[in-house]
Image (cartoon, rainbow, N blue to C red):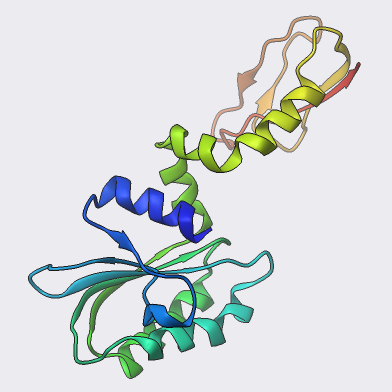
Length: 184
């Protein structure tokens, strides 16, 4: 996760450098040195559960930072969606305990997905084995469409069931959701 975040960071901030993994990084997984108001530091935290379990690790990383060195920006990269409650906790924690951090950002799952969509080469580097495995299972000429159905909760309808054509219902969600069942 940290290596993927570094690749995404380096794309946007070419001077950024990764720091050694583990306890010797001084609370910095990635750093961009030499900004006028201080360095920019990224801290990467991976979880498949909730942000609550990351709070002690985040505090530990913040405490490892050198308070005598001003930080222009501190960016936390996490593998799950951020919540309002978490953002409030993070803001309060940084403002009250770490005044040397001038600005901060949260790159949560959604932010990282946007960055990955803009960088298909990075997606390929980190997710190619998974993609290739799925491709061998599902990409075949022998698939037969068994049934498809428009999800009734989406904002679309199919005026003529004999034709695969859909129209958006005015004022409804723009998400088009189709359940597809195939047989190989």
